[in-house]
Length: 438
Image (cartoon, rainbow, N blue to C red; front, side):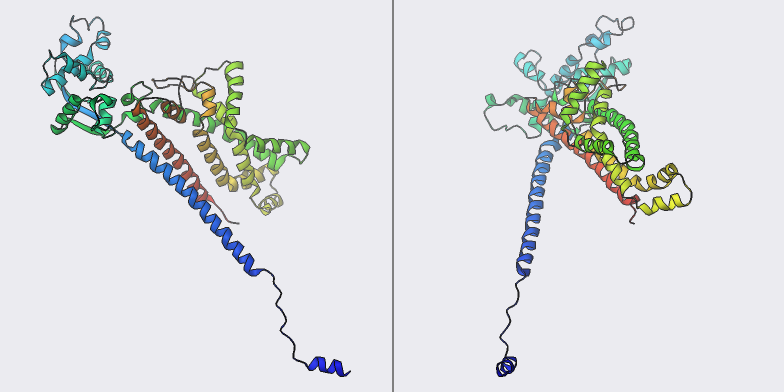
């Protein structure tokens, strides 16, 4: 008894605190946050490097060097035999580069007998001046015999030299622009006849072997055709399939198998869809290669799984109480879906559709396999006509050896990024505008 009483009265020793690892857990959380910040920072740095590199190389593509010259539409050069009344093709076959050459000789005060200077003069203006002047004459034959100021495209090398992309301090033999051409360029610039102007041709021209007359006009039309086909086919088919699987289909092994395969299809590489489109649409059904219709069908197959998954997620996000309330008030199941569930899920469906379209717009591999890498200079009037697409045009310019095509390629990438950003911003705006919090 004594020991017990003494033990209870003795001062208790400091009880050691149980280590439950709070400090370690807090430290681990701080490390995790730090790793997250570092990962996001690395991603932002690479994104910034990519954007700065593309913009630095491509912003000059939106400007084109032109030479403003008084062109004398001499009848002796355009129609020396006077047959244009009976043969309108005379105006198409005329020697229009001679008109530009004569105007440049007069502007620079060159002796027409100086063959060496005349030879260098031929590389000063773009070969596209033939089309420029021909279009003016064909549109208005009354210009024959008159003189008009025309802004003519400079050749690609002169354009690069004017923009400072060619080092003019190196030896003349090691660059494509001669000293005499540089002197002419500086003289025309001082007289105000040579300047950079906004390059509308980048948006309106088709494919060309000359950089200064190349543009993404055909590619934009082809991309718009394909996006229209994808929207018309993928949206109704994807939404209908999602509604059936989410609202009407009974859970069974078959529906589970379909669901698993849809999820797998969303992860299949796009080139596989290109091979499928080549085998089915081109080889089996005999559809034309390089056509926007085939490209749109292939991209529809590729986009469908994305739209189905996004639509099912949007339908599943609608609270079950909405369904119960509609059914409790006497609505049929179809009325419940189309009058209540589908309108509430519409923001998520639109967001998924736009993101799927944006992904399709940037795809290149499936379009290469169905032949959309063809050289197309004329605008397609229907989806069955040969066309190309923006990412394919970028791929084609990337394979060109000429320096000026690098500028065009970077400019086209900027245009494609603007399209993608616009579509993603639209998706965000739609989601925020129609989003409902339950």
